[in-house]
Length: 173
Image (cartoon, rainbow, N blue to C red; front, side, top):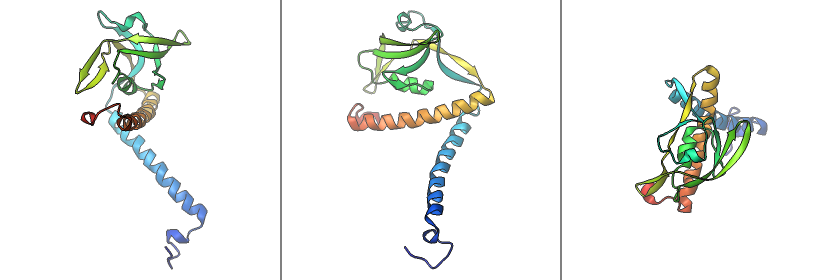
């Protein structure tokens, strides 16, 4: 649309219009980070993805070991425990592949078995281990804010794909 106003968006050079559009997207991302930081601010410690101990009669202790850092579940990267809990949903047979960092080496554990349960027609694995906590510092807070933001985006994206592909029924909405 044309305008006689010299300050109008359409009358700016192409490079300035490009910067304005890009900055809008960047500030949306920054706002997301700020919101996640506000959500995480009251937290005193952050859960890690490193196995600390197992529950009594743990099934997964046959595969996982204390101090294993979980890197991926069924090929999906794990950044936070939020990713981990999402990866443990809708697993029918109770078996998943987990990539861990064990003694400095990446190890792929095939068919790690967990007990399963079902709630509202969604199968999920019963987590039978606990993870370490990490003390909140400025560095860990920034790292956790970024990791949690990435996790939220990934889980939303995966959930939409799973809904469209039929992995979850309409009752899961």
